[in-house]
Length: 326
Ligand SMILES: [Mn+2]
Image (cartoon, rainbow, N blue to C red; front, side):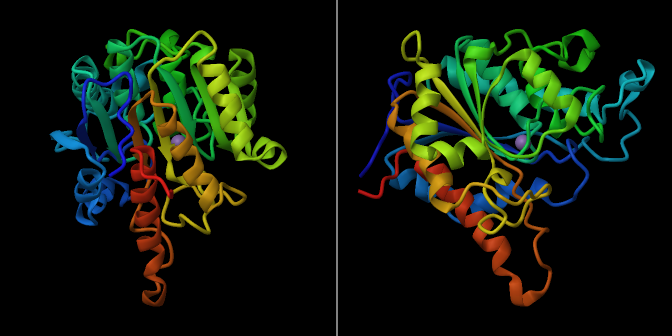
């Protein structure tokens, strides 16, 4: 039995937060992520690794409909290009309270998306408990957009602007529960290959560390992760959270997701990121987001597309929780 109990946890208790939230983007199906991971054996696999499930929470999304009459009101009043800030602010606040409690209790926090907007809640809540949290953001995209730089207004392309405080000056009241923000020495992006032009300028001016696919090619994933931990642990070990967007993985290996970009992490690179992070003994939380079982080929002969995406999602979680080849 393998177990990578973190030095920042009190025991082997792991809390699951199911966050079937899809309003951060526009494609139906991503809300099925938590359910499909659990149906395919997530809890049994977590137990097999020596973890005990504590709370298994579900974020109430009954009011989170695309056609909600409440949608966008404050944003439109300010003329901002951002979709569903009220609904997502409320859902992420609820999520953040559960995440904060789990971190206060020094238990592992596993958040299942849903789209990547859920990380505002999971990490925003973790930061309330652990202000020095280090975050490894694994993604095809920069996720640093603001209402000014975003081509779409979809919040799933903006979570890092919320978490770094760049969104503060827009004064969106539904997100006023965010109190602690990431600084450039607390955040590493890995696997990036698609950044909007103005978003790129914003990322450079903020000073985020980015290991794009070019660095993965040049250095190899081993060196990328070594440098990641050198930066994050420069002043000593700190608790880590990994926010894993399944679209970081090449579409060949994880096709069922909403914003596919070719040239991504291969199967072993994707796993190595999770394994190496587990090996630090500092990991306290993880998000696994953007699995959309409705996407991929609809031809019944290609039904395995959905299956392989769910399978790699499960494998990335268990790798992060200490599963090793040898
Ligand atoms: Mn993302």
